[in-house]
Amino acid sequence: MSVGTAERASFGETEEQAALRASVRDLLTKHSDSAAVRRATTTDTGYDADVWSKLCEQIGVAALAVPEEYDGVGAGIAELHVVQEELGRRLTPSPMLGSAVLGTFALLSSDDADACARLLPSAAAGTSTLAVCWADAHGWTGFGVESSADTLTGTAHFVLGGDVADVLLVLTHDGLYEVDPTAEGVTRRRVPSMDPTRALSEVSFASVPGTRIAAPADLADRLRTHALVALSAEQVGAAAALLEQTVDYTKSRKQFGRVIGSFQALKHRMADMYALVETARSMSYAAAQSGSAEDAAIAKVYCSEAFEQVAAEAVQLHGGIAITWEHDAQLYFKRAHGSAQLFGAPSTYLPELAAAAGL
Image (cartoon, rainbow, N blue to C red; front, side, top):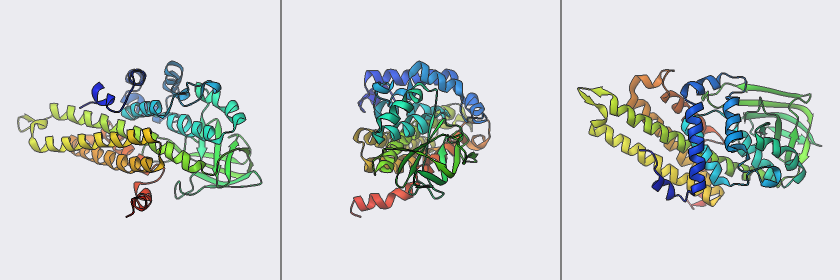
């Protein structure tokens, strides 16, 4: 039940994008199997620096969204979508979402050429990482850090890679600031999370001077749209991989003298899982193609709920083995529930979507 060339072509995937997908998948197959993913979660960075280096040096994933003038590839959201989907399939921990997507788009959306020229080349090369400090303790609808006379005070929560990033980009109610993570008054710590394959942190600022980066008033809304689309791609990739693993398992597991995949009731459940994955894929690709905030929110809601349902069914169909540490299903289950809360739970977007629909 993998997505074939014809199915991907229906979403307008070009030959270059197909080649990109194949390159990323091949590299991750070789260097990011389930054992490697588990080892990566125990490192100081929360990801395998060698795998990230290979992704950047051999494929250029961190440079995809960066314009050529800043030593990037100058690709678009479609290429990022491909990479995010493949990283989701393997649950590969990496700075891709936090640095190459959020950090890069924060700078590009700022229209601050000096900041882009100074920070983007090294980020595109993968030799430095960016972290966007944004959310308050309640989520991404507010700002955890306040600014006054270019001095920052407060705590940003749920920061992707914030404890190890080389550059902190702090989003406040009145703009975007660059902060050196080693500056006096900056405190960083990784926090426990449901999903061990995605490191989250808290970053606190005690009267820390920040370098203002010229940014539009709607920067938070723009960033949220990019983040939701990229996250939905990751969710689709993970859900598709988990479905494939479940189908393979039901073809080999025997009960009552028959492989369990031959039972009609289980076939129906897997067919429902397949429908969830493919409709989620459609939602995610539609949001990537349109670039609209409303489509991004729809993708967030649908892909989050679809992945959670697929993960729940996978655990049921695998049986007790699925919740053991040695089995991958529990990692996908945790990723499903963790990613559903990232950038806001689906329920936070429903009132806005209902209002847009006139309900």
